Image (cartoon, rainbow, N blue to C red):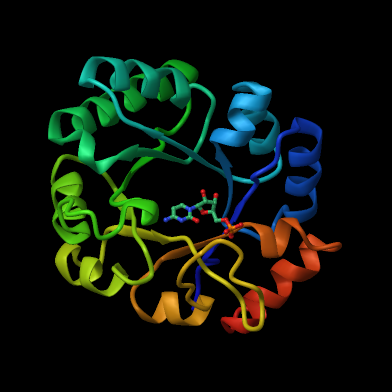
Length: 226
Ligand code: C5P
């Protein structure tokens, strides 16, 4: 494997804590994920602080009318994330607006635009009769998204549907021997990558470790990158 597949979820409520985590993980991870918990606690500036240390996956799962999502994506792209999530269920026009807005915002800031990544189905809603993850991902990518967030259960089927180029991100990952926490089903890092993931999202097993850098290194060794 040539590319680092590790995304660490900085699910924390303090900017200093998140910055320290990013500093420790700098050079060891593909992205640090800034989600709603951290963003709402600290505000947009946290993206710029973390970006100085590691590429940022900004996971705000935007879902609104196209105009609103387009304007929000434009604002967020000025902060310099490399990946930005929207909900696939927002539909084609909303995803097109996110792609356009992000391109505008990045250009205004003299930055590369973030890749728009569509969240397919939240694991908390699985089995409630929503559209299939494979068709949601396929339609989002047709509308200009660069990839999708999918569960470990769905990733093989989604990869089959979207082809080799799309970026697939899989959360709910546990390294060998780690507790599942609140996930009903977990995959190991190796299983997720074998099934077609490009990136795996891991939070608590790394953020809760006394030595997050050592935990990240152990995980990379587990997938043959150490
Ligand atoms: O701590 P843990 O590894 O469980 O963190 C997983 C991260 O992935 C969290 O940021 C969570 O919001 C996110 N996530 C998830 N399951 C999904 C979608 C996202 O665990 N289906």
